[in-house]
Image (tube, rainbow, N blue to C red; front, side, top):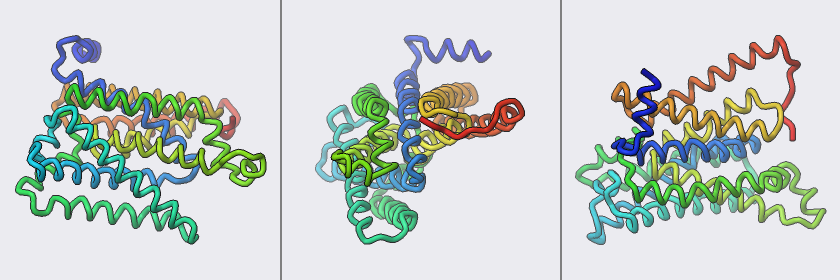
Amino acid sequence: MLFTILIELFSPDFLLRNALYATLLLAAVAPLAGCFLLMRRAAFLGVALPQVSAAGLCGGWLLLEFNGVCSTTAAASGQAGLVNSAWCLLAAFGAALAALLALAWLERGGGSPDARHGALYVLAGAGTVLLLVYHPHADSIYQGIFRGEVVSVGRGDLQLSAISLLPAGGLLLFFRHEFLWAGADFSFWAVSGRNAMFWNAALLMLIGVVVSTGVFVAGPMVCLGVVLLPAFAAHILARRMWHFFLLASTFGVVGGLAGFAFAYARDWPAGSSVVAADGLLLVFAAFARAVLRWFVPAGRVRG
């Protein structure tokens, strides 16, 4: 039965092929951003950023409706057209970028990063609700955002996702050593004449691109799950740094495909099913690690 479902999913005339390809693309790239968040012990930032991007996305939708371009309901269901969808994606990224700049400025005053990220999460969540409070279809739009209705992805949304995610994922992998060293030993890079601030800023911008695209495609809850859960699972099993990135992306694709296939077979919400599949992979990784400890000496992730 599983083989039959997979054949149907990848057939040229499959009705939800755009949603499937967008899910797999996001599932392959988003865990790479999660790897850097975990290594920098900034997982809570990964929780806050999708919420911020969701607020920016709602703001973009409302501006389109206010200017008479298209309704918020049409934009939320992926029927806004390529140009308008690009505007909404830019609005989500702009909100994430503004939040990152604000966090960088607040960092100069010291204090707890977790407190700042928590405050950002709460404020962004409240802002999302307040943006939609007077909209006649606020409840359905809000539920659609947080349920992760991936099936509404159109061809234009898939193209925008590929344009955003593929370069971001390639840059995260190609410059992974620079990003890791700049975050691990800021003073060493400063003494050696390298611009650590540039590499840290570039990493945060790439993470912002990945997260905002994930929110644009699947909503904040699904984006958060796809970013962090495969990276958590890979961190449990990886013994070298390249294992970490490879396993994270692999777990993401496997979880994305399994979740989408199960959702299609059982008529369940696709986004939530993908997150549930990623959670099962996390449990599998923890169990596999416990078994491997009987045969392989424990070791930490290393470069």
